[in-house]
Image 1 (tube, chains in turn green, orange, purple, yellow):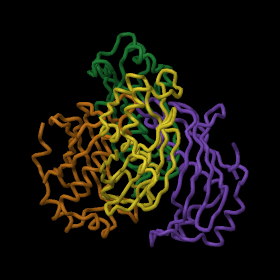
Image 2 (spheres, each protein chain N blue to C red; image 1 turned 90 degrees about the vertical axis):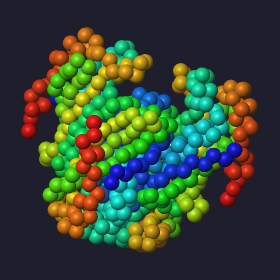
Image 3 (cartoon, helix red, strand yellow; image 1 turned 180 degrees about the horizontal axis):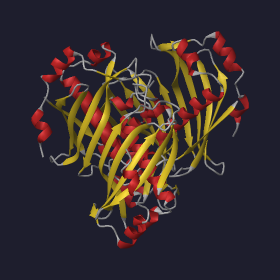
Image 4 (cartoon, each protein chain N blue to C red; image 1 turned 90 degrees about the horizontal axis):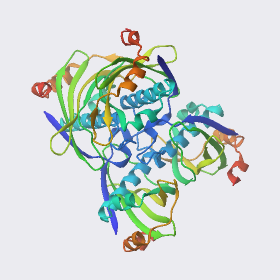
Amino acid sequence: MLSRLQHTVRSTEVDFLGHVNNAKYQEYLEWGRFGWIRDAALTRDRFAHARIAPVVVHVSLDYKREAVLDDVLTIETALVKIGNRSLHFRQRVLREGGEVACDGKVVLALFNLETRQSSALPDELRAELERLIAPRYGEQG
Amino acid sequence: MLSRLQHTVRSTEVDFLGHVNNAKYQEYLEWGRFGWIRDAALTRDRFAHARIAPVVVHVSLDYKREAVLDDVLTIETALVKIGNRSLHFRQRVLREGGEVACDGKVVLALFNLETRQSSALPDELRAELERLIAPRYGEQG
Amino acid sequence: MLSRLQHTVRSTEVDFLGHVNNAKYQEYLEWGRFGWIRDAALTRDRFAHARIAPVVVHVSLDYKREAVLDDVLTIETALVKIGNRSLHFRQRVLREGGEVACDGKVVLALFNLETRQSSALPDELRAELERLIAPRYGEQG
Amino acid sequence: MLSRLQHTVRSTEVDFLGHVNNAKYQEYLEWGRFGWIRDAALTRDRFAHARIAPVVVHVSLDYKREAVLDDVLTIETALVKIGNRSLHFRQRVLREGGEVACDGKVVLALFNLETRQSSALPDELRAELERLIAPRYGEQG
């Protein structure tokens, strides 16, 4: 499954250089992952019941084009791999013509909200997530 | 040269999971780079005169420990390599006991504010930056 | 003229109490004013040519209902009065059913970007703005 | 009691006009109120035990001077009045020379985290807060 979320760049997302600040893209990617969970009809309750939450443990981003005020961006999000304790996402932020503004790999671990330690993926949730993997999206140039 | 900037975690930097949001660390690292420029007595004017500004083109971050409200963090910043059009930084965010909360590599390119394209490093600026490289900091485990 | 901008609450806009942080509403209102300028077909260039920019000098906000993740908000913006050096806006943030989450009065002054002092409103711009006033919106309960 | 918190303006707090964005001041004021709670040795646990949290219901801010990158600001916070369900703060953000950048009145209500409705102030907490009121600070010009 590939999830797409549209967002229009707002004034407070633009820094003193007149373009979207690098840190803001990580917020965009987080919004994209929430959109992915919604599209997957994986209610966040499923995580909440297990008292676990996905947290970012690694991010690798390439910034390729700048985005400016009023640009209509598309945030693409795909789950490309599942590890023992980790979920591997590929996410891209596209400008209107389809140009890639930011290309990212994001690894999340499951975090137990009681112990505040990483946690293994419950079997039932793993089965559900495996059906959602989009392996090819991870390999796109 | 290794630059250190201290920061106390503020309420609006903490997300609904009760810890510093992953995107906020990229802001911390930007603050650290501004501190590095200040410590290097490289006035930003030097960049402004040349109508160039360093912009982030790549970032790779490992999140190792969470940070919470009122934590006193140290943001360490070192220039570890200079390319033709790029500056390679290693940056770490440490908690009070010295534990690494976030370990990052950040590559900046020089961006011409008129053409909005990447720009080669002026020779004089390069000479000044080369004296500031801290190659070993990039190799630390 | 009454301008309306729709916005869906994103994860990083929600604080540790599980609702939109009070400071975020001021960003929403700024986005609403940019939308108002766009709807008024007042290009920001008009301000840029005169080397002036509207800046906030006073804000008064009443928070009436909380907004949470995924809420679809409408930001309403109306110019209700023009002073010698000031523009008076009334802005409201509404939840989906029409309930008011936040009700605000915002006064902007024109700021000269060269002198960094407040500036009188150029006559031509004043004439254009006067046609856009929505006095009744300011009086609504 | 008057609480003072120092803060150095960071790059991501500055907007495209080259000064601290108006919304950011509300974050500064929130940080100041957390500092006030700390200085008052009122542990936030006291609120947490009662399952109540103070939330902002009204804010009124006058912006008097701009603040720019690297400015060292002082955020002053004083409780000036206690209502039946509300706490009234006066807060000011000062620049280094003592000039007022932003002058604010902030009213908080106690919010029951279970019912998500406003809540009366428990008697014991009221007694503790009354000793902390600084009525004169509210009247300063």
